Length: 114
Length: 109
Image 1 (cartoon, rainbow over the protein chains, first blue to last red):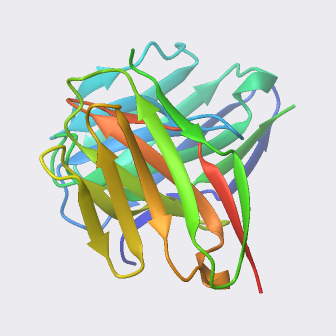
Image 2: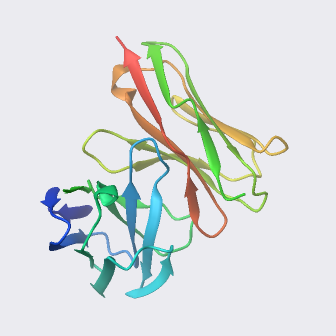
């Protein structure tokens, strides 16, 4: 595997389910990100991790819970989501969390909340 | 003040034509302006980026023009090809990337 991988690619869940999104980067980077992408809207930065420590949390509801067990893996735990949470969730990584570093994105997980 | 406004939302250009996408910002502290390209089913990928100390940067058929006084920057794609059909995002940052809403570009053969 190369680059940034995300699993699953598609996920359908009910509002009472608990699920997790997984991201893995094979680039040796120290920073990882979760973004939410909705149609015709700017990418919304959700969380930033640098060296496994959370450095940014952009007022994301507590029903989204990130976890970064090591510099290569990032999870987004989901529980009691709302239909408006349906979106493409993108994971990215960069050399470090400085904004001028190129971010490398995975293909995303398309989430549908029923 | 943290917004980046991108236009147009969608754009159709004939093959061989010039595609132009514009972005505007308010925060004068922004000092890095990248453009990302996203194909269907893929995540965005960095296309080209500029710092405010230059007014233009060219890489192949892709050029960023930067107007610091107007707080605007634009992406020009020369000799547009069907393979350029994608969604393009501008962004700006000082400590965190702020993204535009994207432009869906279609190049007609």
